[in-house]
Amino acid sequence: MESKTIIASAGKRGDKVRSDCYVEIELTKSGGVKLDVKSKVESMYGESIKKMILEMCSYFNIKDTNILVEDNGALPFTLAARLELAIKRILTGTQKEFLLPFNPKNNYKTTKDKLRRSRLYLPGNEPKFYANAGLHNPDGIILDLEDSVAPTEKDAAQYLVRNALRSVDFYGSERMVRINQLPRGLEDLHFIVPHNVNVILIPKCESAEQVKEVENEVHRIQKIHGLKNEIYFMPIIESAKGVIKAYEIATASHSNCALAIGLEDYTADLGTQRTNEGKESIFARSMLINAAKAAGIQAIDTVFSDVNDMEGLRQSVIEAKALGFEGKGCIHPRQIQIVHEAFAPTAAEIDKAKKIVIAFEEAEKKGIGVVALGSKMIDAPVVKRAHNTIRLALLNNLINENWRSEQ
Image (cartoon, rainbow, N blue to C red; front, side, top):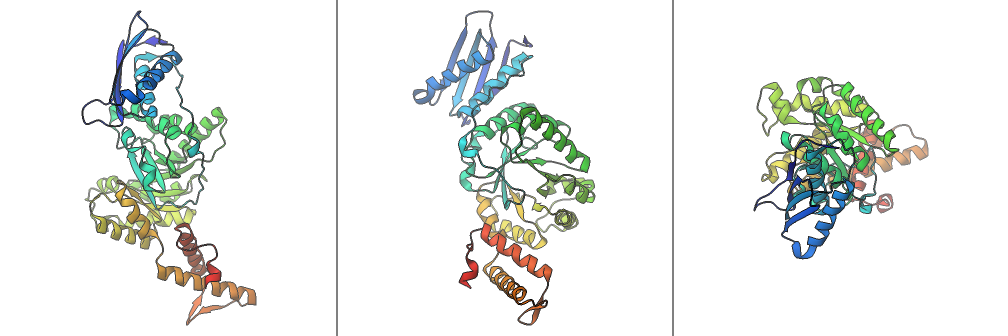
């Protein structure tokens, strides 16, 4: 192990910082480990903070050092991530990782067809948002390593996201991570694949080969660690080229669970402005939906960027649902409930679906090939759509499993 410098730092400092910390480490030639801990929670957690620091110094074989910690209520996963990064910024030649134990409350898996109405984006280098994110009940929580993270803090986000996946209780929300654009994103996989991720978002995806690159690296890492857990992919289409290649991207891997669209980058690629009306993106959105449905996976709409316009968000979701989208990105917790409500089947849709399914089932029992409901004939696509409405109503807890007996 060699030192490339004698002093390094990580984290954030200042009066406005909360749920985070600043760590500064200076290597010395003698004197042992000297700590200077300034914490807003010193009386309650000062000793445990010092204990963790000393434990990590021992783990990384650091015997002589001065360590300054300015703590503004950082949780253990944040303190550990900040200190490990500072250590690795000052030392080279170590591949060791200081891994916190897995939180047993996050010992849940996911499925390919899980309900994904909402996914809440959290900046990868902002741990203050992590602890309570699951309380808002999004279907998925995205720990973002890409656009929301400054280039100089990419490494910091990797350690925070890794520790959060292991430690933070997300209250049943699907654990998602948006990696960086390839090839850089392949490095991110080492910080998430062994650490409890459910879905990997692949940004700015433009080819099947990019999906396969991610898939191959995921399998390689899983093999190294002896892991067999299922990890799904959600490629994000964000360019004209990506739109044209949407179907080949959608079918590039059996692990694809959805296609998502990102309209900020897409409209920039077209050289136009994004509008709430969305006329400039109707072709791209329709292409993505068609590709996803043809591949048998979900279609997920872009984010609605005005966090104060709740009615605009509702109308955007209603339009997205009418087009065939099954979910939408959220950039603020207050958007989640609106998204869930707008994507849920209406009472009229549920009632109609119940009548169609029951009429079809009764006709099948009687061996009747032609089914009519009122004056309209019911064919296979109509029945399929009705079954899907019933499935969504069940998933949204709008009806129960015994709905037939209530008719």
